[in-house]
Image (cartoon, rainbow, N blue to C red; front, side, top):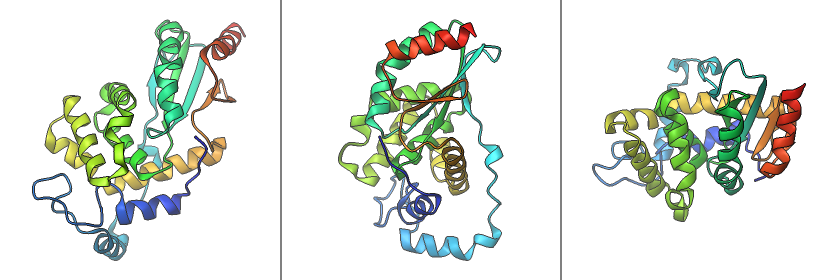
Length: 232
């Protein structure tokens, strides 16, 4: 998936329509119930800007699997709404995990990319469960991508992601609190923007093996690169 959305554009998307702040009234009792419509929310957010905590991207942790002492580090930049990332997760990822991560040869870092607000929402849900639940929720998000994002209707997508959070074992209050966390959303956007600018990530999935950048490729091309890095 080749897209690029700037910090300004993502922040605007969040203010007028992201993180459940959609522009029409929500049904009573739903996840969006009680939130201001998008325009009013944006105006109120502008008025309260001085009182908001400063955005600190150092509070965002990388999500890591594998031994910290592994000889090779692999980074995947991926979007939760990217079909190519879904396919990578279904095909290449299980083999990489079984043959390299679980065997202690590779430390794996997953970094989210936000090409759209739904990818941001999915990231917030995955991170809501903390380090222990993140990769399990990621599995569900990718395995059911076509279902939870079907139709592109924001309110329905919000409810679908909430169900994923509940399925993972979190309670409703925890899920709601995570998904209403505007500061977290803005911090994640700033974190992603810095990462993507530094590493020149404009498509997903993008892979790094010990700092060397690669585009998406099949497992039989990834494995020799990992083997060579391990042998060095």
